[in-house]
Image 1 (cartoon, rainbow, N blue to C red):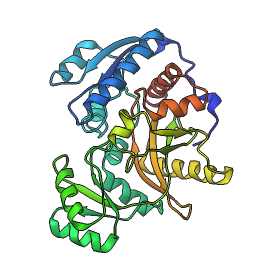
Image 2 (tube, rainbow, N blue to C red):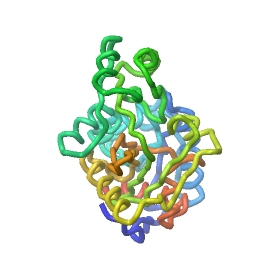
Image 3 (cartoon, helix red, strand yellow):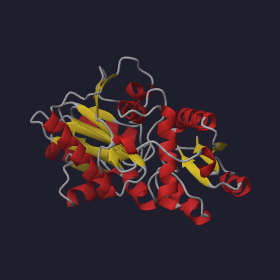
Length: 318
Protein backbone atom coordinates (compact mmCIF):
# COMPACT_ATOMS: atom_id res chain seq x y z
CA UNK A 1 0.00 0.00 0.00
CA UNK A 2 1.16 3.52 -0.82
CA UNK A 3 0.07 7.12 -0.30
CA UNK A 4 -0.12 8.45 -3.88
CA UNK A 5 -3.54 10.07 -3.64
CA UNK A 6 -3.54 11.32 -7.24
CA UNK A 7 -4.52 7.84 -8.45
CA UNK A 8 -7.57 7.48 -6.21
CA UNK A 9 -10.47 9.17 -8.04
CA UNK A 10 -12.44 6.99 -10.44
CA UNK A 11 -11.80 7.70 -14.12
CA UNK A 12 -14.76 5.55 -15.19
CA UNK A 13 -17.87 7.07 -16.74
CA UNK A 14 -21.12 6.48 -14.78
CA UNK A 15 -22.48 4.13 -17.43
CA UNK A 16 -19.41 1.88 -17.01
CA UNK A 17 -20.77 0.70 -13.65
CA UNK A 18 -24.04 -0.51 -15.14
CA UNK A 19 -26.97 -1.09 -12.82
CA UNK A 20 -25.73 -0.74 -9.22
CA UNK A 21 -27.60 -2.10 -6.23
CA UNK A 22 -26.83 -0.31 -2.97
CA UNK A 23 -27.30 -2.86 -0.19
CA UNK A 24 -27.99 -1.16 3.13
CA UNK A 25 -30.10 -1.37 6.28
CA UNK A 26 -30.21 -5.05 7.09
CA UNK A 27 -30.99 -6.69 10.42
CA UNK A 28 -27.82 -6.23 12.47
CA UNK A 29 -27.46 -4.11 15.59
CA UNK A 30 -25.96 -1.45 13.32
CA UNK A 31 -29.04 -1.11 11.11
CA UNK A 32 -29.69 2.55 11.95
CA UNK A 33 -26.14 3.57 11.05
CA UNK A 34 -26.34 1.56 7.82
CA UNK A 35 -29.57 3.31 6.83
CA UNK A 36 -27.81 6.68 7.14
CA UNK A 37 -24.71 5.47 5.32
CA UNK A 38 -26.80 3.95 2.56
CA UNK A 39 -28.84 7.11 2.05
CA UNK A 40 -25.65 9.15 1.64
CA UNK A 41 -24.15 6.65 -0.83
CA UNK A 42 -27.39 6.45 -2.86
CA UNK A 43 -27.55 10.23 -3.08
CA UNK A 44 -23.92 10.53 -4.19
CA UNK A 45 -24.22 7.85 -6.87
CA UNK A 46 -27.50 9.28 -8.14
CA UNK A 47 -26.02 12.77 -8.44
CA UNK A 48 -23.06 11.26 -10.32
CA UNK A 49 -25.42 9.81 -12.91
CA UNK A 50 -25.07 6.16 -11.91
CA UNK A 51 -28.08 3.86 -12.40
CA UNK A 52 -28.88 3.06 -8.75
CA UNK A 53 -31.26 0.58 -7.16
CA UNK A 54 -31.72 1.06 -3.39
CA UNK A 55 -32.17 -2.27 -1.57
CA UNK A 56 -32.95 -2.24 2.15
CA UNK A 57 -31.84 -5.79 2.90
CA UNK A 58 -34.61 -7.99 4.30
CA UNK A 59 -36.09 -11.45 3.91
CA UNK A 60 -36.83 -10.83 0.23
CA UNK A 61 -33.20 -10.09 -0.66
CA UNK A 62 -32.61 -13.08 -2.93
CA UNK A 63 -35.74 -12.35 -4.94
CA UNK A 64 -34.77 -8.68 -5.20
CA UNK A 65 -31.27 -9.50 -6.41
CA UNK A 66 -32.59 -11.87 -9.05
CA UNK A 67 -35.33 -9.46 -10.15
CA UNK A 68 -33.21 -6.30 -10.40
CA UNK A 69 -30.61 -7.76 -12.80
CA UNK A 70 -27.72 -5.92 -11.15
CA UNK A 71 -24.33 -5.43 -12.75
CA UNK A 72 -22.68 -4.88 -9.36
CA UNK A 73 -23.47 -4.21 -5.71
CA UNK A 74 -22.28 -1.47 -3.37
CA UNK A 75 -22.28 -3.09 0.10
CA UNK A 76 -22.87 -0.51 2.83
CA UNK A 77 -24.29 -2.93 5.38
CA UNK A 78 -22.58 -2.66 8.79
CA UNK A 79 -22.11 -5.63 11.10
CA UNK A 80 -23.24 -9.21 10.81
CA UNK A 81 -25.02 -10.20 7.63
CA UNK A 82 -23.16 -7.56 5.64
CA UNK A 83 -19.53 -7.37 6.74
CA UNK A 84 -19.00 -10.97 7.85
CA UNK A 85 -18.62 -12.71 4.48
CA UNK A 86 -22.18 -14.03 4.22
CA UNK A 87 -23.39 -11.28 1.87
CA UNK A 88 -20.17 -11.58 -0.10
CA UNK A 89 -20.74 -15.32 -0.46
CA UNK A 90 -24.28 -14.82 -1.72
CA UNK A 91 -23.15 -12.29 -4.30
CA UNK A 92 -20.33 -14.60 -5.41
CA UNK A 93 -22.86 -17.39 -5.95
CA UNK A 94 -25.06 -15.06 -8.00
CA UNK A 95 -22.11 -13.78 -10.02
CA UNK A 96 -22.62 -10.17 -8.94
CA UNK A 97 -19.41 -8.14 -8.45
CA UNK A 98 -19.38 -6.11 -5.21
CA UNK A 99 -17.44 -3.46 -3.36
CA UNK A 100 -14.96 -4.12 -0.60
CA UNK A 101 -13.21 -7.22 0.66
CA UNK A 102 -13.95 -10.79 -0.33
CA UNK A 103 -15.48 -13.60 1.70
CA UNK A 104 -12.45 -14.63 3.75
CA UNK A 105 -11.20 -11.14 4.60
CA UNK A 106 -14.71 -10.02 5.52
CA UNK A 107 -15.25 -13.01 7.80
CA UNK A 108 -11.84 -12.59 9.45
CA UNK A 109 -12.18 -8.88 10.04
CA UNK A 110 -15.66 -9.30 11.56
CA UNK A 111 -14.24 -11.79 14.08
CA UNK A 112 -12.11 -9.79 16.51
CA UNK A 113 -10.58 -12.94 18.03
CA UNK A 114 -9.53 -14.45 14.70
CA UNK A 115 -8.16 -11.10 13.57
CA UNK A 116 -5.98 -10.91 16.66
CA UNK A 117 -4.80 -14.49 16.17
CA UNK A 118 -3.74 -13.77 12.59
CA UNK A 119 -1.91 -10.60 13.62
CA UNK A 120 -0.11 -12.32 16.48
CA UNK A 121 1.01 -15.14 14.18
CA UNK A 122 2.63 -12.56 11.89
CA UNK A 123 4.25 -10.49 14.64
CA UNK A 124 1.79 -7.60 14.35
CA UNK A 125 1.15 -6.15 17.84
CA UNK A 126 -2.35 -6.27 19.33
CA UNK A 127 -3.43 -5.87 22.97
CA UNK A 128 -3.31 -8.96 25.19
CA UNK A 129 -6.73 -10.49 25.61
CA UNK A 130 -8.84 -13.33 26.94
CA UNK A 131 -12.14 -14.97 25.95
CA UNK A 132 -14.95 -14.81 28.51
CA UNK A 133 -17.55 -17.55 28.89
CA UNK A 134 -18.10 -17.64 32.67
CA UNK A 135 -17.63 -15.68 35.86
CA UNK A 136 -14.52 -17.74 36.55
CA UNK A 137 -13.11 -16.60 33.19
CA UNK A 138 -13.67 -13.01 34.34
CA UNK A 139 -11.81 -13.65 37.58
CA UNK A 140 -8.93 -15.33 35.75
CA UNK A 141 -8.73 -12.61 33.08
CA UNK A 142 -8.63 -9.88 35.70
CA UNK A 143 -5.77 -11.60 37.51
CA UNK A 144 -3.83 -12.26 34.29
CA UNK A 145 -4.35 -8.99 32.43
CA UNK A 146 -4.80 -6.49 35.25
CA UNK A 147 -7.16 -3.52 35.27
CA UNK A 148 -8.52 -1.44 33.62
CA UNK A 149 -9.79 -3.63 30.80
CA UNK A 150 -12.20 -3.24 27.91
CA UNK A 151 -14.92 -5.76 27.11
CA UNK A 152 -16.08 -6.36 23.53
CA UNK A 153 -18.55 -8.64 21.75
CA UNK A 154 -16.37 -10.50 19.25
CA UNK A 155 -18.63 -9.94 16.24
CA UNK A 156 -20.15 -6.48 16.69
CA UNK A 157 -19.10 -3.07 15.41
CA UNK A 158 -19.80 0.59 16.21
CA UNK A 159 -18.65 -0.05 19.81
CA UNK A 160 -21.94 -1.84 20.51
CA UNK A 161 -21.79 -3.81 23.77
CA UNK A 162 -18.38 -2.45 24.73
CA UNK A 163 -17.47 -1.28 28.25
CA UNK A 164 -14.40 -0.21 30.19
CA UNK A 165 -14.09 -1.93 33.58
CA UNK A 166 -11.94 -1.30 36.65
CA UNK A 167 -12.52 -4.42 38.78
CA UNK A 168 -13.83 -7.98 38.66
CA UNK A 169 -17.38 -7.07 39.65
CA UNK A 170 -17.63 -4.56 36.80
CA UNK A 171 -16.06 -7.10 34.46
CA UNK A 172 -18.69 -9.72 35.25
CA UNK A 173 -21.50 -7.22 34.66
CA UNK A 174 -19.94 -6.05 31.37
CA UNK A 175 -19.40 -9.63 30.19
CA UNK A 176 -23.05 -10.48 30.82
CA UNK A 177 -24.16 -7.36 28.94
CA UNK A 178 -21.84 -8.05 25.97
CA UNK A 179 -23.07 -11.65 25.87
CA UNK A 180 -26.57 -10.38 25.04
CA UNK A 181 -25.12 -9.22 21.70
CA UNK A 182 -22.77 -12.10 20.97
CA UNK A 183 -22.07 -15.63 22.21
CA UNK A 184 -18.34 -14.86 22.12
CA UNK A 185 -16.99 -12.05 24.29
CA UNK A 186 -13.42 -10.72 24.47
CA UNK A 187 -11.66 -8.70 27.14
CA UNK A 188 -8.52 -6.72 26.28
CA UNK A 189 -5.85 -4.82 28.12
CA UNK A 190 -6.68 -1.13 28.25
CA UNK A 191 -4.11 0.90 26.31
CA UNK A 192 -3.47 4.29 27.91
CA UNK A 193 -2.92 6.86 25.17
CA UNK A 194 -4.35 8.44 22.02
CA UNK A 195 -6.49 6.63 19.47
CA UNK A 196 -6.05 6.80 15.71
CA UNK A 197 -8.15 5.57 12.82
CA UNK A 198 -6.65 5.02 9.38
CA UNK A 199 -8.61 4.43 6.19
CA UNK A 200 -7.34 2.45 3.22
CA UNK A 201 -8.69 2.92 -0.29
CA UNK A 202 -7.72 1.02 -3.44
CA UNK A 203 -4.38 -0.10 -2.06
CA UNK A 204 -3.45 3.22 -0.51
CA UNK A 205 -3.35 4.44 3.09
CA UNK A 206 -5.19 7.73 3.62
CA UNK A 207 -4.07 10.38 6.15
CA UNK A 208 -4.43 9.09 9.76
CA UNK A 209 -7.00 10.75 12.01
CA UNK A 210 -6.42 11.32 15.74
CA UNK A 211 -9.57 10.95 17.83
CA UNK A 212 -10.46 12.76 21.03
CA UNK A 213 -13.58 12.46 23.18
CA UNK A 214 -14.62 13.41 26.71
CA UNK A 215 -16.30 10.00 26.90
CA UNK A 216 -14.54 7.09 28.60
CA UNK A 217 -13.67 5.81 25.12
CA UNK A 218 -14.76 6.33 21.51
CA UNK A 219 -18.17 4.71 22.05
CA UNK A 220 -21.36 4.60 19.93
CA UNK A 221 -22.52 8.01 21.16
CA UNK A 222 -19.14 9.62 20.46
CA UNK A 223 -19.15 8.10 16.96
CA UNK A 224 -22.64 8.97 15.80
CA UNK A 225 -24.38 11.41 18.14
CA UNK A 226 -22.08 13.68 20.12
CA UNK A 227 -20.89 17.02 18.80
CA UNK A 228 -17.89 17.25 21.15
CA UNK A 229 -15.81 14.48 19.54
CA UNK A 230 -12.51 15.85 18.25
CA UNK A 231 -10.86 14.83 14.99
CA UNK A 232 -7.35 15.93 14.06
CA UNK A 233 -5.93 15.85 10.52
CA UNK A 234 -2.94 16.14 10.45
CA UNK A 235 -2.96 13.69 13.33
CA UNK A 236 -0.23 15.40 15.38
CA UNK A 237 2.44 12.69 15.06
CA UNK A 238 5.90 13.64 13.86
CA UNK A 239 6.81 12.52 10.35
CA UNK A 240 8.65 9.37 11.44
CA UNK A 241 5.87 8.13 13.74
CA UNK A 242 3.18 8.90 11.16
CA UNK A 243 5.09 6.89 8.57
CA UNK A 244 5.42 4.05 11.09
CA UNK A 245 1.65 4.14 11.61
CA UNK A 246 0.99 4.12 7.86
CA UNK A 247 3.31 1.14 7.33
CA UNK A 248 1.75 -0.74 10.25
CA UNK A 249 -1.71 -0.09 8.80
CA UNK A 250 -0.64 -1.54 5.47
CA UNK A 251 0.78 -4.66 7.16
CA UNK A 252 -2.27 -5.17 9.37
CA UNK A 253 -4.74 -4.79 6.50
CA UNK A 254 -2.71 -6.91 4.10
CA UNK A 255 -2.53 -9.67 6.74
CA UNK A 256 -6.33 -9.92 6.75
CA UNK A 257 -6.64 -9.53 2.97
CA UNK A 258 -8.49 -6.21 2.96
CA UNK A 259 -9.44 -5.08 -0.56
CA UNK A 260 -11.16 -2.04 -2.05
CA UNK A 261 -11.51 -0.04 1.12
CA UNK A 262 -11.56 -0.35 4.90
CA UNK A 263 -10.50 1.30 8.15
CA UNK A 264 -8.10 0.25 10.91
CA UNK A 265 -8.41 1.42 14.53
CA UNK A 266 -5.16 1.79 16.47
CA UNK A 267 -4.14 2.83 20.00
CA UNK A 268 -0.78 4.35 20.93
CA UNK A 269 0.55 3.63 24.42
CA UNK A 270 2.51 5.92 26.74
CA UNK A 271 5.81 4.61 25.33
CA UNK A 272 4.74 5.54 21.78
CA UNK A 273 4.05 1.98 20.60
CA UNK A 274 1.10 1.36 18.27
CA UNK A 275 -1.48 -1.36 18.94
CA UNK A 276 -3.94 -2.30 16.14
CA UNK A 277 -7.40 -3.11 17.53
CA UNK A 278 -9.66 -4.14 14.66
CA UNK A 279 -10.49 -3.62 10.98
CA UNK A 280 -13.80 -2.45 9.50
CA UNK A 281 -14.46 -3.69 5.97
CA UNK A 282 -17.58 -1.56 5.34
CA UNK A 283 -17.04 1.54 7.51
CA UNK A 284 -19.66 4.17 8.16
CA UNK A 285 -20.44 6.78 5.52
CA UNK A 286 -22.57 9.16 7.62
CA UNK A 287 -22.00 12.83 8.39
CA UNK A 288 -20.01 11.74 11.48
CA UNK A 289 -17.98 9.09 9.63
CA UNK A 290 -14.20 8.89 9.44
CA UNK A 291 -13.43 7.52 5.97
CA UNK A 292 -15.04 10.53 4.21
CA UNK A 293 -13.03 12.78 6.56
CA UNK A 294 -9.76 11.06 5.62
CA UNK A 295 -10.70 11.16 1.94
CA UNK A 296 -11.23 14.93 2.12
CA UNK A 297 -7.74 15.30 3.56
CA UNK A 298 -6.47 13.33 0.55
CA UNK A 299 -8.33 15.66 -1.84
CA UNK A 300 -11.46 13.59 -2.55
CA UNK A 301 -14.97 14.87 -1.93
CA UNK A 302 -17.72 12.44 -0.89
CA UNK A 303 -18.89 11.72 -4.43
CA UNK A 304 -15.35 11.02 -5.61
CA UNK A 305 -14.84 8.70 -2.64
CA UNK A 306 -18.01 6.72 -3.39
CA UNK A 307 -17.07 6.41 -7.07
CA UNK A 308 -13.54 5.32 -6.14
CA UNK A 309 -14.93 2.56 -3.89
CA UNK A 310 -17.27 1.46 -6.68
CA UNK A 311 -14.47 1.55 -9.23
CA UNK A 312 -12.47 -0.88 -7.11
CA UNK A 313 -15.22 -3.47 -7.64
CA UNK A 314 -14.64 -3.15 -11.37
CA UNK A 315 -10.87 -3.50 -11.03
CA UNK A 316 -11.11 -6.47 -8.63
CA UNK A 317 -13.91 -8.48 -10.20
CA UNK A 318 -14.32 -7.24 -13.79
